[in-house]
Length: 255
Ligand code: NAD
Image (cartoon, rainbow, N blue to C red; front, side, top):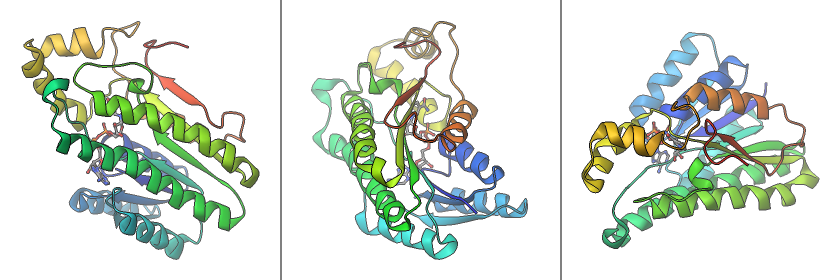
């Protein structure tokens, strides 16, 4: 059985990807800090006869990341697909951005991506049969956004990390990708709408229409299913797309 570990797997994009890969026949590892949601999802999947385990993994903790991957190897004996997806958002005007919040963003987005990708790379290299590491980037991996300097910094960074790891991983059959969605209505985004309205002094409707969807060609949100479809597609890529960033942005920031 092929296996997939997805961080931030208990909610939003990660949850949709967990469900998709479990239904594709993968043994999944739901890695998250929200254990109530993680265990509920695992119960739902195992109730359908699918293979799933829960691990508490704070992606900013080297010890928890390594222990979570050890648990994956113990349960399934293989590490085939890993999605570094856990994330948070903290918005503030740049001149008021607290250093403590910058550090929190870096711990989860930058340290987390490094620790998860390195843990995956170690197991895939040792396993001798390659694997795929997928980062959740964003349209913010290409453009800049008001109030989101740390997020922009980190999301540009993960796309670079994927490119470098693609070079080093090639000889071991380890392929890497960055999936870059535009706005998707998940809890992470629902929370930002009133916060941005407050910080920018505009209405919530204006945040959605004039900020979140303004630069798309059709005024549409991307969906968690769009990302899950792309992940399932990449799970079968034989290296043609390694190192690439895949933009699921409804025309925002076309290449
Ligand atoms: P979400 O809030 O629905 O889910 C995030 C999950 O990450 C939650 O289950 C949370 O418990 C978990 N998490 C938070 N901190 C963690 C940590 N330290 N260790 C492990 N897990 C942790 O958010 P989402 O919208 O599904 O976002 C998932 C990823 O997608 C993030 O990296 C986000 O930046 C990115 N993204 C989101 C959008 C969007 O519009 N929603 C667009 C582009 C990229």
